[in-house]
Every structure is written in C-alpha cells, then in structure tokens.
Amino acid sequence: MSDPSIISCDRLGKTYLDNSGREVVAFEDISLEIARGDFVTVIGPSGCGKTSLLFMLAGFESKTSGAMLIEGEPIKGPGADRAVVFQEYALFPWLNLRRNIEYGPREKAMPRDEMRRKVDEMLDVVGLASAAERYPHELSAGMRQRAALARVLVNEPKILLMDEPFAALDAQTRLSLQRELSRLSQELALTVMFITHSVEEAVLLGDRILVMTARPGQIYADVAVNLPKPRDPTAHEFSDRRRDVEDLLKRASAQTGETISIPIIV
Amino acid sequence: MAAAESAPERTDARPLKVRPPARKAARFWRGFIVPAAALLVWQLATSLGWVATASIPSPVSVVESWYEWVFGPVIPLAWYSGTWTAYALLSIRRVAAGFAIAAALGSSFGLLLGWYALVSDLFDGVINFLRAIPTTAWVPFVVFFFGIHEAAAISLIAFGAFFPIVTNIAAGARQTPRTLVRAARMLGTPPHKLLWRVVLPCALPTVFAALRIGLGLSWVLVIVAEMLAVQGGLGYALWAAYQVNRLDLIVAAIISVGLLGLVSDWALVQLAAVSLRWQRGLVGQ
Image 1: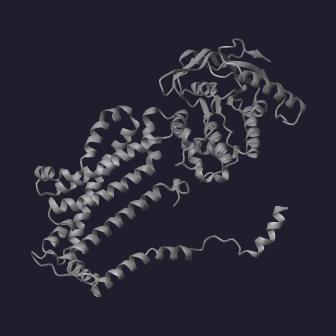
Image 2: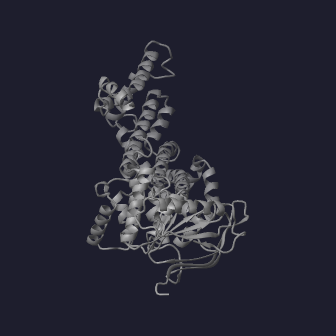
Image 3: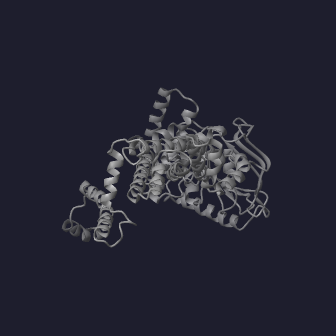
C-alpha cells in the first residue's frame, strides 16, 4: 500500500459496567482502516457504540480488547493531533472567543506574535472576526459551533473527530456549517470521522459511510459515496444514495453484532 | 400576511425603547420604603406608648446613645463613649483575619477535595464529623488553648468559616462538566494542570457563593468570640450593654454589626461581579 491508513482498528472491543455493575458490550470485533484525507461518516441506532468508538480514538475512553492505532502508534490518552468537536460545543464559558481559540496554542507555549496571527486567520476562516471579544453565552448556537471548530483547527490536527456536532442547530445554520466543514476538510486535507444520526448529513458529507448495527455494535455496511462535492441534496443521484443508506440503516437497526459478521461493502 | 396585519399595530403602540435609567434609580429608592416605614412604626409605637420603653428603646434614644458612642469623649472605664470606631475596627480586623484564613485554606482544600478522589476518600469523613460540631461548642476549648487573646477570636472565626467554604467549593468542583475537562485534555492540557485550567474557573461561581456564606458566618462568630473570649469589639460592647441594662446601646450595637455585615457582603459581591463577567446573562442579575 502506498498510503497507509491513518486510523486502524483491529478486532476492537469495548465493554463497560452499567450502574448496577452488569457488563455491557458496547461493541466487539470492529476492524476498520481509514485512509488519510478520508471523510468518514458513521451512522447507526442509538446505543450502538459509535460515540464510544469516537471517544476511544480521542483517547477519552480506553479499549477493552483488540488494537487501535493512529499512524501505526497505539493511543496514549488525548492529544492535540486528534481534535474533537462535541455536540454541546464545550467552549470554555469563562474565556471570550479569542481566548478560547488561543487555548491550544497557549498550551503549546506558542510565541505571542505567531499565535495572534494564527488566531486572527482562524477567526476569518470561520467568519467570527467581529465576535472575537464576546463570551460564548453571547453567541448563537451556530457561532458557538464555528468557534469550537476554529478552536481545534488552529492546532493543525491530523484527525478531526466530530460527535453529532450539528444536531442541535436549526436547519439553516446546519446547512451552512455542513458546507463550510466540507470545504475546510478538503482544503486542509483533514481526516474526519463524523458521527451523525441523519442519513442526509451522512450522505452529504461522507466519502465513506459506516452503517452500524444495534448493540453490541458492528459495522453492518461500508458505503463509498462517489458523488462530487459540494453535493446537491436535491439531485437524483443524491436521493438514490440516501435511499440506499436509509434502507441499510433500517436493516442494520434490526441486527446486532451477534447476528452478522461480514460487513456489506457497497 | 401576519406581518402586514401587525405592522399598523406597531405604529400605534409606543415605540420600543431601552429601559430608561430613571427607572433604575426609582427601583433603587424603592428599596428604602420598607425600612423607613418600619422605623416610623417603631418610633410611633414608643412615643405613643403602645409599648413600654423599658422593653423597647425608641429610635431617637438609640440614635442619641449611638452618637455618644461614636463621637463622645473617650473617658476611662466608660466603654459607651467615643469607642465605637475603635471597637468596629477591632471586629473588622478579627473578621478580616479569620475570614482570610478560612477563605484561603477552604478554597484550596475544597478544590482538592472535590477534584481528587484520593483526597476526598481520606478527608471526607473527618470533615463531615468536624462540620457536625457547632462552632460555638469550641469556644471553651479555644479560650483554654489561647487564653483571652486575639488568636482565640481569629482561630474560632477561621475554623468556623472554613467548613461551609470547603464543603460548598468541593461540591462545586465535583460538578465540573466532563466535556470541558475532555476539551481541555484534547487541546493539550496535561492532567495535573486541569485543576487550575478547568476546575477552578468552572467552580468560581460556587467559590463566591461559598465565600459569602463563610463571611456571614464570620460575623456571627466574631460576636460570639467577643462576648466570651476576647476584650473590645462590637460583640464585647453588646454584652457590656446587656450587663448594665442599656437596651438602647444593645440595639445600636446590633444595627452596627448588621451594617458592617451588609457592607462586607456588598464588597464581596462586587468582587464576584468583576470576576464572573463571563457569567452575566447565564444566571440572572
């Protein structure tokens, strides 16, 4: 292989204890290779372990079995190379927008001038230059999520991990952020893993869609989307693709990891 | 269509305006109506003979004795003349010293207790036990230990105010949102810096709430300490006035303590308002 995978999971499993001390298998035996620059969307019924998978890659949670490598190295806790964008934004409410974006560079002790320049640049990229001195609670939901994106992109991460980042936004804002993300990920050649519960969003953004089964989660289907970007959700090809994925999701939701073994590759 | 219908209504109505500042001033003065009315009723009750002045002094007599207490000549052995400023300063100094110790130790230990499971496991039991003992129960012990000395009053205040501060701040630190901790980790904060970078700023509103409780308790304890353990101060005056049946001075001392408590609380709230600028709008005014 000329371009080795940036993310690789081999028979990865996650078991946790619930509140009453019973073992719950979130997922088992997930094997997965993600190539550099891929935009992978993950969709599946709730509780299928997709967020666990994401948080394990982020280093927030540990694996219970199998192997998980980033550029061939095992994961040792969170790091700025793997940026995470949370559904609830997770901006620091006591810092204004500029200070929120400066957080990562400050942790790296970046020289002041360089930091200033990079943060200004990033504020422009996400269109928040005029709101730089405002606090998160003074911003709309869309602006907050833009800020959260800027806060991680300023660190020049290799991988962007997104946990239903646009789920809490209104339709109009969601659409504009989806477009911006799609553009930015191509421009910055980011590898993105994007969790969503919207089939439309999965098809709109993904080069590749992973459809997961109910718990214990397993990859039911691995769908390549070869439509050119930016994609038009009203186009026929798009609708066809969406219908296919909706169909796969419906079938996947009726399955668990125990009933299937080999993912359908479309 | 809805917009077309509502448009003429809007022109009839008074134009929308930002609330004018005059309203704010009016609201400020409104706060004085009830105290003024209470004062009036008090004066009427005593001057019209509704109550015996032997059991309730009239406001006028309170003001007169208070005036003497503040501005009268300093006479040896006459503690009720010209000593108010010195006594008030004594009480303020004790509260300031005791509260400062409680605030410094309580905040830092509270954060550690709330954030590190090990610290919590080690100290929770001890703290809950000590917290269950009313601080006033320590008075005899403290007087034995320090004698009639400033240290007795200050340590009683510091000890008593420490517990509400520590437990409230620990509770605040325990509620640090996990997502913010993860966000900080993902942005490169090493685990040992999380307390400073995330836990403290998150807990800051609780820290100020805890400090307010601690400050209020400090004023309670300074009066107790001055009644029983040290000489001088408003609590000492209060007790001395009781022993010579000077009801007017008792009331003057009570109101003095109330005013000092109010001013110190106000100062703390101003400090909080500056530190919590980012929070404005999240939690009302």
